[in-house]
Image (cartoon, rainbow, N blue to C red; front, side):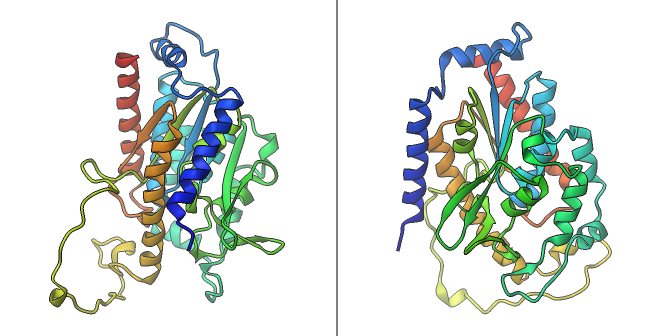
Amino acid sequence: MINLRSTIRVLISTCIACGSVCGASPNSSDLDQKFKLVLEGKAEQDFTVGLALGAGAAKGFAHVGVLDALEKAGIRIDMIAGSSMGAIIGGGYAAGLSVDSLSNVALKSDWFDVLNLLDPVFPTRGFIDGQKIHAFLDELYGHKNIEDLAIPFSATTVDILQGDLFVLNKGNLATAARASSSIPIIFNPLAYDDMVLVDGGMIDPVPIDVVRSMGADYIIAVNVLAFPEGKTEKQAFKYMNADQLKNSRSTWRIPKANEAWYTAGKPNMAEIAHETVILSMALIAANQVELAQPDMIINVSTGLAAWNFLEAEIAIQKGYNETMLKIEWAKQNH
């Protein structure tokens, strides 16, 4: 069996090497100094900034807060690569949607809006067909194609049969975002020839390598799958007595008045499948960020479940706060 973590390390290391050969210079002290001067308002931005927005489902609403903070700091985003929710938010921004517009979409949605976007199907390849989500995104993006966007943009998707990563940089933006966010088991994947295309976050949850290949001078990476402070993927294992274990049961019922719909199952089958994928992505993302070495990494631990689409305000605020902390650090340490 192929060791996925080893494969990812080789892939990212190769991309880093290629980036260096092609002229990219991660962690350049000159760029750090230029970036600091831009933040301080003492210089114009004469270098390109690429933004890598990571996967994370509802956690990815934090990207809206990140964009808000970067705008207020005077940073111009010249190119964006996104995986999964990062592709949805990043694609919207590249299409010309303002931070306020993206916030409004996230904050004004209630559970009726969320349910209205779901089109359940007999689970041959996924529980949700995804056509309603595609139609919603296409309308939101103004039916734009990637090559027509003001900000160069790429989304990632993975052929689940061969494990190949594909970069979507042409064609309908909504289709690209839909392909990039096709969480296995939950959503029907898209297809091309014999390929079955799923969530790009499966092997590239923070597409630093992609935005570097687009020619960015300074790379800002956003990992919304960051582990809470003090907890990492390298934590020691814990002991448990097997005699304490018992068979689990999901609770199928209508949510109470003071209870959100997504907690009623605690968790149900779809949520378990989703959280399994998210945990795998988080482990890969932690290694990816360490190996790819972006110029700035913004780690956001939202504290929200991946299914928690109704508390976007928390994620947005966390993204904003973490970005402002990083900006202040950059001003003081370069």
